[in-house]
Structure formats: C-alpha cells, structure tokens
Length: 352
Image (tube, rainbow, N blue to C red; front, side, top):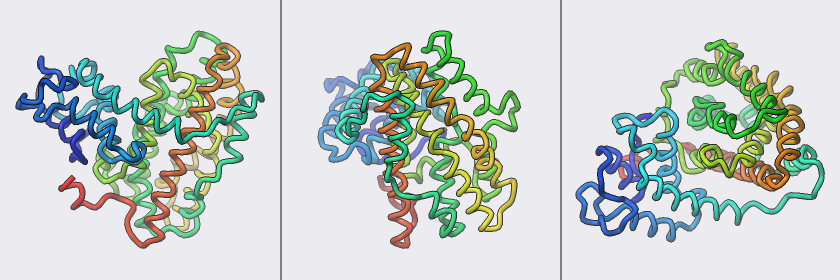
C-alpha cells in the first residue's frame, strides 16, 4: 500500500519511524524523545493522543495509525522494511491504540444476548438494526459522482475481501464450524478461479467506473469512519482471543448483504452501467443468499456449541460491525445531503 499522508501526531510519528529500518530505539519508551527518528517519542505522543481523543472510533489520527500497523500484516507498505511487522516497539504502540478503540466499542455497543440460539440472536440483531439506508439512496438517488465515491470508500476493504477472515481458519479445530467457514471462503476466493475472486470482481467494478484499482490507492481520501470499518476486522482477525468476534463480524456481513448488493447493482444500471460494473454486486446477491444460513447456523451455531464461553464475543462482533457500518453510512449520507463530497479534501490531506 502506498504510504498515506499523516493525520495527526501519532500517524506522523509512525510514518517517520516506518521510513527507517528497525533499530534499537524503543518508540514506546518516552526516554527516546531525543532520538532523531522518533522525535518527541512515539510512546509519549501515543499516550497523549489516546487520552485526548474524544471519540477514538472517528479519530482520523488513531484510525490511520491502526491502518498503518495492520497493513504490515497484509501486503505491506511501500518502502517499509518488512521486519517492522513484528517489532515489539511498534506492537506496544499499536496495543495502546487498540485498547482505546476497544474501550470505545464496549462503551458504544449495548448488551444483546437474550440467551436464544445464537443464529436467532444474530437474526434479531440484523432485524433491529436501524442504521441509515445507504443502499436505498445509492439505488434511487445517487449521482454518478456519489456512487464513485462510495466505491472509493469500499475499495479499502473490498480489495482485500476475505483476507481478514482467513486469519481465523487455523484457530478453529477440525469440525463443522471450520468446514462452514471454508465453504464461504471458497466462494469469496472465486472457487479456485482467479478472475472470479470477489476482490478481482470489485477491481473490475472500479475500472468500469474509471477508477484506479491499485491496492490502497484511495486510503488517503477516505475518512476515519471508513477506516474504522476495516480496522475492526483486523482488530478481530489478528488476535486469537477475538476469534468469536471475527465470526460474528463475518456472519452479520453475510446476513446483511443480499438486499444492499441488489440495490447497488440496480443503482449502477440506473446510471447506465452494465455487467462489467455490476458483476461484483450481482455475484453477492446470489452467493450471500446461500451464505446467510451457513454463517448463522453452521458457522456461528457450531462454534458456540464447541466454545460456549465465546458466545458473547460472537454477538459483540456482530453488534460492533452494525454500529460502525451505521456510522459509515451516516457519514456518507450526511455529506451528500449537505451537497458536499464524502471524501476528505485534498487540502486537508496535505496539511494533516
């Protein structure tokens, strides 16, 4: 991924650090404040920024910082030494930001467990979700510019679609839950056909809309509300203790996918686009209608029967996903209804 512009003191210090090879200085130690690479001490900066953040879930600096740290576990960052991925100092800083975000999520997600079968609980969560109808707006009202913006936002996730959930595969024992997960992943990765991988189909949509489809190209322009939806997946994916939450995340994505994707495809056709642009969304209408039952009953149901102590994590992951998706949708719709772009101004990028 290309290195983005900083959005505050933490991401600025991280970017300066990542441009250098891993050394002996510890960015989590305020004693390093005079190091020429670390400047004022990344650890001290992080603590101050975390404590001073009014809303970590929409904090541009903290969400970009997490994106940078997490991307080291995916395809890496341009020009960044790959040894940073597991550098203890960087992990210590990441843990501080993660703790702040986790606390904010726990404070924002209300308890949801009514002790029904977990598939029924998941269905109830979805039914009771009152998030903004972003897909309905895109189907009926969005201009071409607005639809293009939506695709730019989603590219941060869709170009790595299914990758975060693959982290949980070795964390499940052989059995029904693992088999159900791999059944879903098989479809996500195109059933063995590279051109049918969902990430490849999304790149095709981007090209049809005249967008650069290179991985990470649009990170600089998307706000924290977008980054937060992607960082949530990585937070769950990279920690074994959150394996239940990651399955809840996947479940709610699949269970809320069919209708929105049908609407997205209809919106693109309304704007004059054909199969090249809609194939990604058409594929999800078909695939996710099947996946909905697999993830709720076979995946999450089997998982909770095997590890009942993680039932609450499954539901927390689902509820946190719905929360951040609602905030994402509101961010876009609020901007469009005010007649402005939902993307970050280029001037803001250059001065952040």
